[in-house]
Image 1: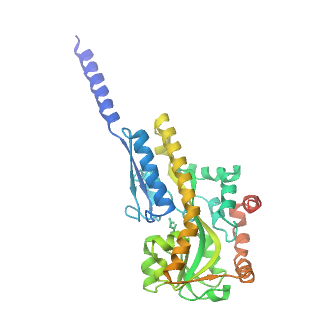
Image 2 (image 1 turned 180 degrees about the horizontal axis):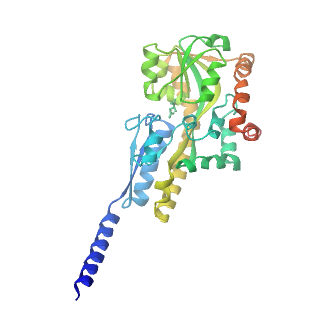
Image 3 (image 1 turned 30 degrees about the vertical axis):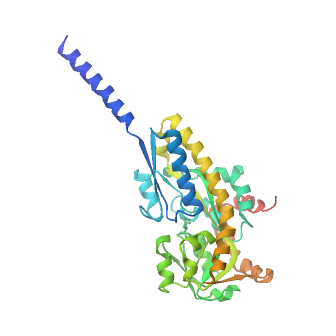
Length: 330
Ligand code: LMR
């Protein structure tokens, strides 16, 4: 055999062996999130891990990192683009560096409840938003609920004037910033992992969040008042990098997508239950006073915050805002 033929043959054998070895290495999916495990997102992530182990155990391993263990939401999208994390589900409020349109979901008093949110998210317009960041290398794989936001504070908040001058922690969103500025309050952008300490040390006066987050992270223990305002939405986008997703073998991608859809549906059912359960657990704790607004008081909050819609109408699109608002009608 000629020397060159021999060399070509050894190269072919080495490549085949190499490919064989590589195929034996499972694909690792790191799923990083910031909330506790006993929340809609925490439970959804764990369910996804289980389903993937059952269905693709020899090919794919999911590692879940809760409680900001691996990355906070301020970093996770950046590192996803670099390939250090494959899956995350940040709040829809945390994508403003990548797209304008998802800011829609932050508009105060846009949705009456999670049922209306569902109707919009499943519509063509809602599904279209999942693709709004593909040019930036991120792809939305589905929406996951947490719930409607409430206002917690060191002082009772019944009418918008009560919030005047108070410092509120917000997620990194310009709409949320404008919402608190509309109340003459001071919004401060901080990562979720710092909120408890900021409240405990009284570095801030209040924050807005869901019953589930306030319960699982014990915010209610360091906030004497929670106003049941239901003024905004905290939902998530389950997101991955287009490079990672498109680089997967077709059969693996399809199985992963089905497992994700099932775990998202599971997480969404939990979100509905947790809104009621964690609210009740907070009331039962007697650590905080839950303030229920009269319809007249609520109308004042709507009136104070609603001008924010106009401020962001050009960026988000008036048609999109109309479509989302229309989802309140069954
Ligand atoms: C927050 O920062 O308040 C939330 O986005 C945390 C979360 O992921 O629910």
